[in-house]
Length: 239
Image 1 (cartoon, one colour):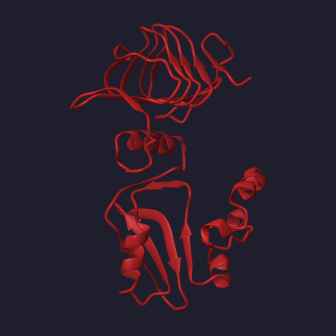
Image 2: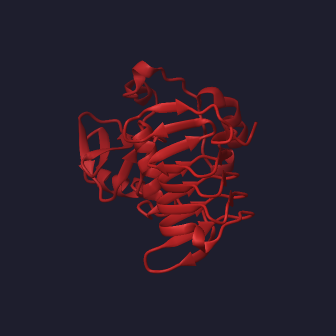
Image 3: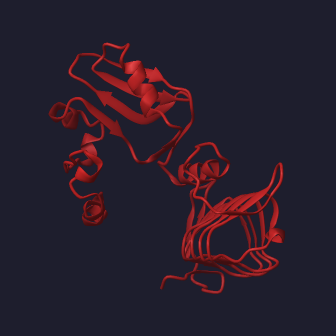
């Protein structure tokens, strides 16, 4: 939980409202294989939060009934899906489960996972909103309190978070996610990009395959991070 530990436990409590017992266990970077944790709690189902994935828990538990190993790691599309079952037995194995997963290990992974969620790759993860318009190919989903027009979307699929505003001649192309309380000014074109909550995007800009977060601009393909000091280009609306 890191610095959000107190907030997490304030929301979750001790787990009784869900019929479970929640235990806090501190893990350092050296214990990322979770082997020490698994010796204290068995059976243990470990689900990593930094992975976007198709539903997989039921499939893993069903496969576990036919497997003797004490540790089973779920794999999707040839990669670790971030779900491991520890039991009181010896041996370990990986089992393949149908579905997809995106690991959120870097900026490219975070960017790709968000756009894959928008595309419907992971059912159930896309926030609900009102379809401003929808046809066989294109769709704009707008959350409550936002101002946008069908003409803002040139083509593709866009998600506009709550209380956001797009200027009349701002244009979105491809897959675009605008977080809550964002603002995109006139003449700006945004494509295959994420604009994180509370970000102001100024006029007449071209933004392609980037993550904009306040004054921070991240180029997804190169990993370059730039701080923009001109508040008429990028700014944090929360400050």
